[in-house]
Every structure is written in structure tokens, then in C-alpha cells.
Image 1 (tube, protein in one colour):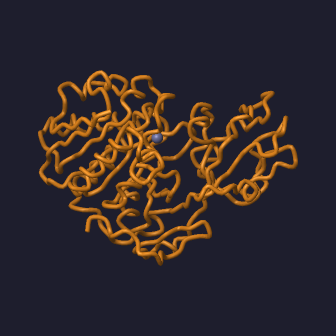
Image 2 (cartoon, helix red, strand yellow):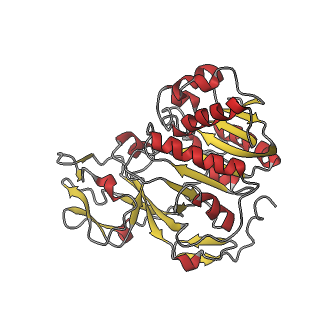
Image 3 (cartoon, rainbow, N blue to C red):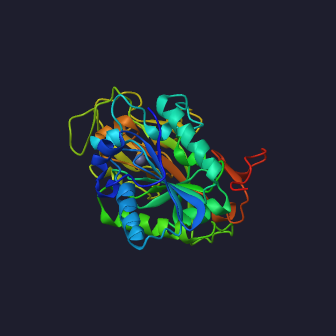
Length: 365
Ligand SMILES: [Zn+2]
């Protein structure tokens, strides 16, 4: 796999929907487009081939700017998994998940990992004003932004997209985590693919970043950012047969389980029925990979029940996503006092606290 780099848009590219890009590009591509302000905005789309909102937003954004021949600032566009996009899938069975292969992740030495290191090194040298990676999800989720460092400019950047902001450090090897070392970076979750609202929302966000001189380092208010901290990943073990609604499987999850996303659930809420019970029909692991299932769930009453207050995100009814990724993530709200005047914080499983480790240097400095 070789990284294609362009200093212009390949002819006709904007006319192509996501599933036709592979015929033109043949693989991941980094396209640099010149604007008035030379310091680029970095935009990543289609890391997951079936998450088309980012590409749709870029198509429309660039068409409108090229009509007037005026990008307010340079734009470096990364187009990710074109081969999976051709098949309208997150990734193919013979591929890694691209958004686990960036520097810092355990697949960094894989073939796509080497290519992404090249992208990272090239972009670090260009000193982007900000980085955004545009995604969709399959369940019923609000639009939200995710960050990997709790710093004023990261919170500010995320707030331009949504007041719902998620801080995460798992999974490792994501694009936003790699770029967070040298510029404000965010992952945008734009709800389901194919919805016009997600496309429009992404365009507004990109326009904002294209026009700003830089991302302000002023503190955010409690209204601007509601910060959540990702504490665990929940998976269904491979040998557990599961279904949704009234089904004769080992576990029958609620038919509308994804309506729980971004809702604070008290203890004792049932996620589904256990028919044929393996000891742990769900498995929760914390940010360090420890099994924390028993902290969050109980299974002793023929039900899958929450054991304490949790807020799930990314709950999905899509079996393929559940197999390839996970059932959901669990989050806890971070009190505003804890991020009101941050310079740099680490959020640890016990809660938020000021980093006493010598951290990475401030991005862009
Ligand atoms: Zn994605």
C-alpha cells in the first residue's frame, strides 16, 4: 500500500460518491489544496468505508468554494479506506480497522500503519491549525465530538460542533490521538450515514475552522461543553448468541437498546433477558484492559442489569458493528469544576485530576 499525495483535486473526484472513489484513487490519498492562509486544516474522511458523511460534506464544501475559487485557508484532505467504501463496509475482513492503526496504537507497524505514519509526519511538518476526523455511527446517537486531551483549545474546537464532548483514551491508535500530539484534534460523530443533517453540520464546522486564525485557548463555559469521560468498552463474547427483542437466543437485548445512548441510567436498568446463561453474557473492560464487568453489570436475576449509574454511547443494533467493534462504550459525566480552567488534565478511572507527569508539549507550540 502506497500513500498517494496530490497538490490538486484529481479530475472529477468531487463528482464521485464514496463507493466510486476507489476506481479513481486506488487507495488512501492525501490531497493538499491551497488557500489564502497557508496553515492547513486537516480533514480525514472515510476511515470507515461505510461512514460517508465526511466525504459528502467535503464534496459540497469544495464545490461551493471552488465556484468562487477561494479557500480561506489551505486544506489537507485525507481519504481513508476507499476499498471498504467501494463495498460500503466499515472495513473488509482482510483489513485492519484503519482507525486503530495510527502512531501510538498496537497496529502501528501494520501496512496501513506505516502509511498513516507518513501522513502524520507530513502533517506535523505543515503545522495544521486543527484536525478533524469525520465518522458516523449506526445506533441512535446525538451528534457529538470526541477529544483525547483535555486542554482549552481542544474543548473549544469540540464545542464548535457540539456541547456534548467525550474524552477518550481507548481505543488506541486513532487518528485524533496521533494528531493530538501536535495540534487541536477532534473526532466528529455525525449520527447515521446518509442523513443530510450530519453533512450540513460538518460543513458548518469546517467553515468555522477554515475562517479562524487559530483555535482560541480561552476557557469554555458550562453551557458550551458538557464533558463525558469514557470509562469502559462493552463487548458480547464471540460464543454468546444474541438478538434484539423477543428472540430465542442466549441473550435477548431490548429491541430499542440504542435509545439509551447519552442517557444517564440509574442502577437496576435491564438491558435484556438472559435465557441460556454463560457466566458473563457481556464483558466490560476499562481503559487499561482490565475486566470491570462486575462493576457495571449484574446477571444473577435472569436479566442483564446495570449495577451503578452509567451513560452508554454508540449502542448499536448492527450485528456486524458489534462483532467488528463493540456493543457500546460506557461514560461518566465530568463535573464542570474539573475542566473549567484546565491547562492540561489527565482523566483517570478514579476521576479527573491534574497531570503530574511531564506531558506532551502544548500543540502548535
Ligand atoms: Zn467510524
